[in-house]
Length: 391
Image 1 (cartoon, rainbow, N blue to C red):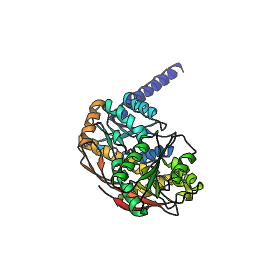
Image 2: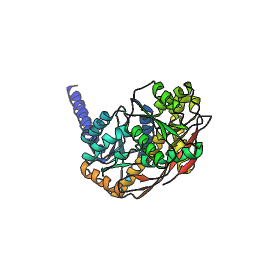
Image 3: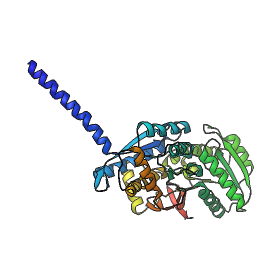
Image 4: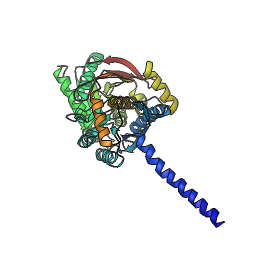
């Protein structure tokens, strides 16, 4: 009996050692990519949608044995971390992904409020970062290691101004925005400048609020009393729902115009009929989509039971850009720092990319030159294509 116990112990030890030896070997072969996502906080739906799209992409690649580079297949490993929808947390997540997880690239953050500071961290640590959804120019400005999949606010602002002037026949505009959000504040200022430079009329009210505000009656009273032809609200969807509903409660019957931060089904869940008939600029229109975009939408709906928002589609395209960069590199380095350099060079080499949110060309700053879409919220709560606006 003692001999059999001894043999059993030796066998168990051998099995444990084999497991310990095999795990690092598998990890060494994997291409490890980090995701800096708002899984909690103000906009958890954005993090969830991005993660859902990433999981779909991951299953596609690893289901085929991995990504083929130089005749060998490498599995992808995705590491998701929660930035809590906070700027300081996004910086901490970036550092953890770089220093502790030793990822070779990072997807996200999405919102400019987190992407601008995290982009600085990634650039300082020479780690490639692709933001799917951030439209603020500062995210990539003078940062050769930071790229994006979305168009920029200096393009989006004039799109909104031109559309509102044409569609509503607007001669005056008002703006309400989040002063604490880089995205909202930046786009509000760009829109105001664009509207005035185009000679479309005065911006009769320019009111700000805080990220945590729930009562917008003071700002809306000033806006409505100025009698604008429309109100531009470049806020996150959760804030938009409250602003639109409270404006209607105060008697406002005019038009609203929104931006790409409106582009989630959760806006309709929160806003309901108050948002029907309104318009916003965004990255793609799910209703009536065709080709690869429709395939993505149908697969997402089947997997998760909902229409993918623009940030989910842009996350898909961001991963596609990263995959193309790795293929451009033509090799997989075991040293994370060397691999990060190879990926950055691979990203910089991309001159054009055909994604499910449209075709892009990239400038020297790493920013895509691509079309925007204006959609109308139908009386069924669907985001219906209204028109495409290209540079």
